Image 1 (tube, one colour):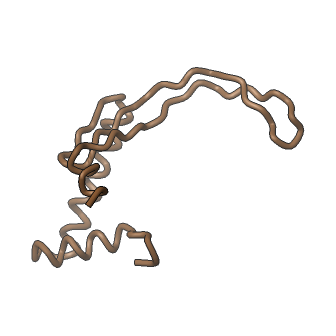
Image 2 (cartoon, rainbow, N blue to C red; image 1 turned 135 degrees about the vertical axis):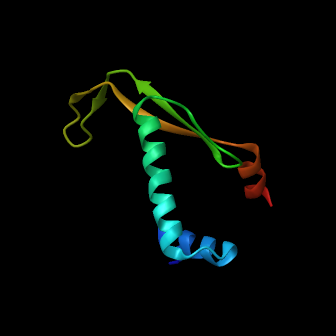
Length: 96
């Protein structure tokens, strides 16, 4: 862990320490978990992660932006984004 950033390895190590499950097994399970979530998001489905939040795919309309250097209008195409809506448990954890 560097500063305030926790990476994938940090999370896997802590999960292994708390559960006693070997690190390699946890990594394999988490890799499949991430693939499943990505598949559902690609299909446009909402993914609910208990006590953390909900991932929701949102379509964004095409719009005009501005080139900040030249000041000229630039078309921004329509797209899809993932929006995370934090659950109450996560919000409360941030307050404590």
